[in-house]
Amino acid sequence: MIDLSTLTIKKAHEALKKGDFTVWDLAESYLKNIETKNKDINAYLEVFADVMEQAEAVQRRFADGTAALLTGIPFAIKDNILIEGRRAGAASKILADYVASYDATVISKLRKEGVVFLGRVNMDEFAMGGSTENSAYGVTKNPHDLERVAGGSSGGSAAAVAMDGALVSLGSDTGGSIRQPASLCGVVGLKTTYGRVSRHGVMAMGSSLDQIGPIGKTVEDTEIVFNAILGKDRYDSTSQDAPAFSKHSGTFKVGVPFSFMNQGGIDKSVLDNFNETLEKLKAKGIEVIDTPMPNLEYSLSVYYVLMPAEVSSNMARFDGVKYGSLVKAKDLLEDYTLTRGQLLGKEVRRRIILGTYVLSAGYYDAYYHKANQVRALIADDFRKAFEKVDIVLTPTSPTPAFKIGEKSADPISMYLADIFTVTANLVGVPALSVPSGIALKEGKKLPLGIQLTAPHFREDMLFEFGKIVEDLKSTS
Ligand code: GLN
Image 1 (cartoon, rainbow, N blue to C red):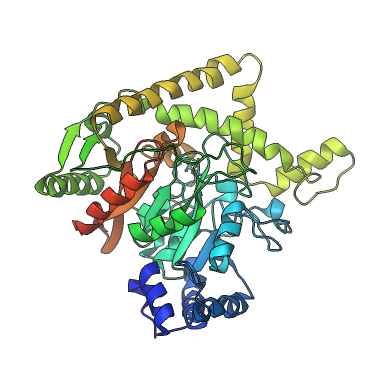
Image 2: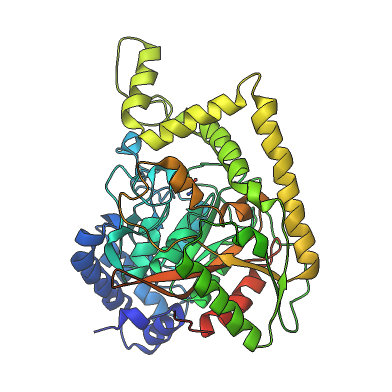
C-alpha cells in the first residue's frame, strides 16, 4: 500500500526510480481512492478510461533513464483546460458535448514530462463563483466536512488533492479561484504572475485577470509544477519570460495592511489564526511592518465591474453556432436566446448582463473607465508596499469553508468572500495560499490559509517564504 497522504512529488519520484512501486501501482492507488471517495466529494467530473495505459506508456522512462521529476506523477485537470481528444466542459451544460481539438500549452508541457492525467475535475461554471455550487454537475464537497463547500471556482482541483485523489492538480485563477479553494481544503495553491504561464487552451473568463496555476499538498510540489509549465508561448501574446532579477537574500520583511484587515466581516477564527501566524514569524526574527494600502478597499468593486465586462465579451462565442450545443428555434435570434438562456447557468447569465451594461454607451465612462482608473491606484499601492517589504501577507479567505447553500442565494455575500484574493489579479502579481492552521466549527477541524503576495515574477520569493510559513505548523 502506498501512503498517499504523506506522498510528495520528490518522494514519489525517488520511489519510482528505486522501483519501490511502479507508475502503474501509483496510478492504481489513486484510482482506488477516487473510487471510494469521489461519490461523496464529487471532485471528478470524469476519470479517464485510459489512466493505466498512460501509466504503462511512461513507465519505460524509468528504465531508459529519461524520467523527469514529474514522470508518472498523477494530475487532476480543471474542466476548463483543454486536453486533445478529451471532453472539456467548464462544468457547463452548453459544452456538454465538446471535445478539445488541441492541447493547452500547459498540457503539452506536462505531457513532455510524462505525467499521468487522471481526469477532469469540477468547477463553478466557466470559473464564475467561489464555491463550485455553480457547476452544472453538482457541488464539490469539502473533504474535511461534507456539509461544507470545497471553495471555488477550482473546487474540484483542490478537493482532488485534499482527498488524495491526485498528487497535484491544475486550476485557473481570475479572482482567487486557485487560492481560495486551496485555503478551504487545507492545501497549497499558486496564482502565477500575469503572463508567466501560457493561457493558450484555457477557456477565457477575464482576459486581463486569468492565470493557470498548480495546487498541491506542499509548497515544493507547487514549485515543481510551476517550473514545468511556465514560459513565453507564441500562442499566447500576453505570456512572457521573467526579466532578470537578483535572488532574495537575508531575512524577509513582510507587510500587513492592518487597516484593510480590521474593517470587519472577517471571521474571528481567521483573524486569530492570522495574528498567531504573525507572532510565530516575528519569533523567527521576521520583521512585520504595518503597510497601509488605502485603495485595497475598492478592489472588490473594481473587480466586479471589470471582470463581468471581460466575461460578457469572452462568453459571446458560446452561441450554439461557434461553440456550444444549439437549441434550435424558429430563427437565428431565437436560436441564440434559447441556447444561451437554457444552457448557461444563472450566475453566468448574471455576469454577461452586468458586463454588457457596464460596457454600454453612456455607462462605459462611469463604470468601466472609472474602474480601470482605480485599478491603477491599487497597483500603485502594491508598488509602494514592495519598495519597503518583500511580501504582503493577508488571510486567503475571510472565513473557513462555509456550508453548502449558505451563500448561494445571495450573490453579494459570495462576492465578499473574494475580498483578499481579487487584488493580486487586478495588479497581476503572484500570490500563494499556504495552510496556516485550523478553525474548530461544530466539532469539525476546518483548514485556514494565509496568502503571500510578491512583486511581479517573484514566485521564487513566494516559494522561499511559503516554506517558512509551512514549517510553522501552526494550529489554533
Ligand atoms: N470567486 C471569484 C469570482 O466569482 C473568482 C473566480 C475565479 O477566480 N475564477 O469571480
